[in-house]
Length: 242
Image (cartoon, rainbow, N blue to C red):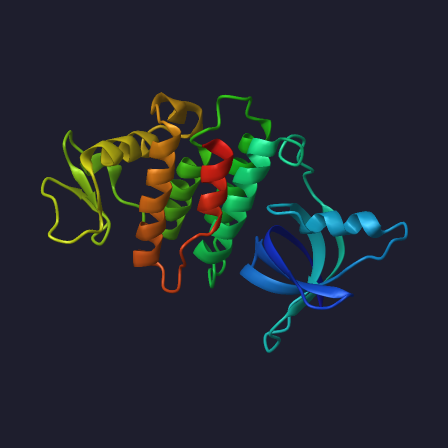
């Protein structure tokens, strides 16, 4: 039975000349792979723009419990972004977040709090002025971790503490293993955790520090989510933002 559905497209993989597999985090079923029928060069060719990373779409879904791939129809852009597609910096960040969400939400089922968080965060990002979103991807990863129930408790942080990546907590002592963030990075992460999007710029970071934090968070997710990979797009951000 067809039903109205809403979702955020995180990635797509071409299957053949006519179809691709689109992974969509949906409001009612979590992460779901759908068959997406590609449009030709005719009047419906613009429909293929729905495959751009993080597009928020509205569509009809026919969920079959036994199906590996679900089917959709009547897909349309629910909230077209104004700045993300044309702003090179935001486009680079959106590619990174697309790769991140594809793996972070892999297997995630019905989670309305997560869906609300993601849609609100992406709309904030799209409308954010230049100079106000340089820490957004870090805050976004931490917010996603919070809605997955794996984010460290920032209220435990005190000056000089380090973030133990294995245990997922701030601690006074440096662990005997390598999976921890040094005191400076731990301090910056605690600041961003406590700030929200509007205050995250109060944690001043250099480009090198941002890359270092992304690598720390990549390790954190790899420790707490099975099969989470090394994110290739970190290198892209490192190149774009220096």
